[in-house]
Image 1: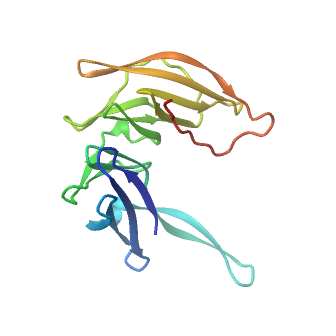
Image 2: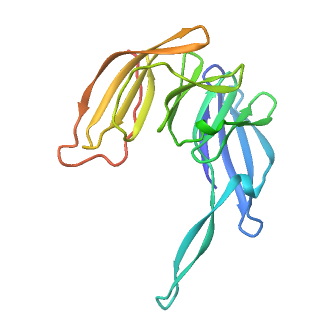
Image 3: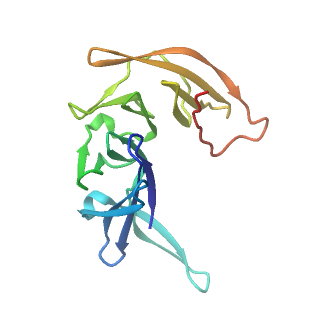
Length: 229
């Protein structure tokens, strides 16, 4: 069982996504459970089965026997959601590897798969919601935003340059704080103001600089939290 939690900002709802599977069938069922914090009630919803070809990929495996013998073979790896964001009563489950996202509507319990174009299938680093728009950072593409009317991802027009590394981003007072780790394990930050111009989103880098060093002890895992005072 694996779960991801997404909170509705406008309504007192918590949504939990979890999966249940059997190794014999090699298929997995998706469940969404909505918790109404006001009424203290749960409303379980169950989506359709996702086919094996969509939800699984083969990968090499290695196992150690009781007498120390090593066995090589093939196994199955599930392509699950690694990022979830909530917007307008819907939860967006984003996969790192597959070419689609899943949109869960908490109002009627339906799920919709959003297919992505080829150029948008690179690995996602992080996702967040700023001023009612969903933003994601793709390793190879950069910062993008989701056009819910056209159901496509559009690239943010921004001249930010940063080294390839691990990225994190968070909303802070209506702006985007983007943090990344460079090749020397140092952490940098950029504060980006986002302006909508027609059908485009322009990003203005208001500040960018070095913020933290591991001092010989590089950070392997880290996350960030935005706080408006």
